[in-house]
Amino acid sequence: MKRIYAASLFTICLILSVTAIFTPKLQAEEIQAHVFNFQPFYVVEEGKEPSGILVDAMKVIFEKCNMSYTIKGYPAKRAYINLAEGKSNIFLGVKGVPELEGNVLYGNEKITKIDLRVYTRQETPLLKTKEELKGKKILTIRGYSYGGFIKYLEDPANNIELDVTDGHELAFKKLQGKRADYLLDYSAPAETTLKSVIIPGIQNHSISVLDIFIILSKKTPDADNLLKKLEQAFIDLKKEGKLSNL
Image (cartoon, rainbow, N blue to C red):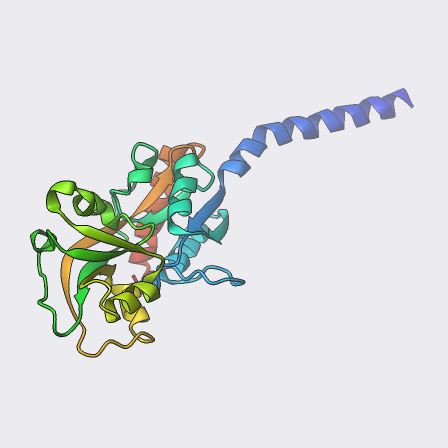
């Protein structure tokens, strides 16, 4: 009886020891991604799982690395704060977001590009450079830093009046209603929005093209090595032709 008890105790101790050794590694392989609505790259709709081009890319990369993951939708500013605070681990996005400064690691591989454009009505002179924005009233989307370009817009020296708006649809409706003469938005979500908000003869011009990178919270366990692993998976998948939609 004592031998059976001793054997059982030894087995329990062995299981606990193995669990203690491997649990941190398993936790490090579990990825939390928090995204915001930025169609067609990120599609966040109430009652539905996040989807979109970059959500699909993340899933393929995670699966290539044999990682378990969770992807949740949040408002843009909250998603960035969660990443900075380590409540989420990863995001595919642009550099220059104020909330992320000093709190994240950036990959070196360019995942894809997004086009930042200025939109205006048919009868309004089209602006083609950021310098031409000076002294104008500009509609912007709440939570967007525009890859750091928001600092230029907010600089008092540029005399720009900002109308910060909740979402793409409302911003285009304000433009349509002449609440402002110009709207700064990314081409992909803008094109999606303009399918429902019809503005005859709307004009647009590219202000800046921004690269998308893997962004990892510094509070993620073994963040440096994990970033290398994720980037290598991206490189391999591109070579295999499994990320052709980017």
